[in-house]
Image 1 (cartoon, one colour):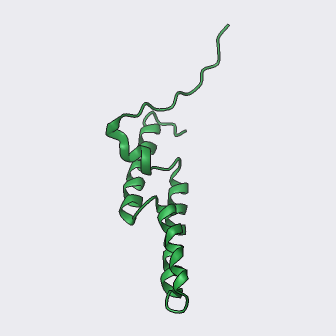
Image 2 (cartoon, rainbow, N blue to C red; image 1 turned 90 degrees about the horizontal axis):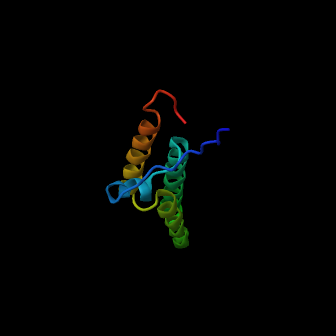
Image 3 (cartoon, helix red, strand yellow; image 1 turned 180 degrees about the horizontal axis):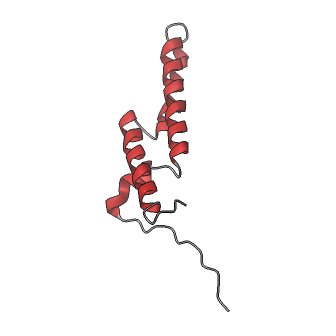
Length: 93
């Protein structure tokens, strides 16, 4: 009688810190976070002249991007690298 196998999460090391911190589970999720952050930043700056409290929208931008735009870009690279690793055998999971 065989036991069902479960996929083990990938082993992460200190070398994969950007992947741990900035990467998303899927590319779609990462791109959506980028668009949401960009829209929040644009709205915050567009309305800041009339309503200075609109700059609080930048807090949402930082949360969506998990930091600055560079942090988001590092996460995009880590997400793509993780996707490439999962698709190495020809079947993407």
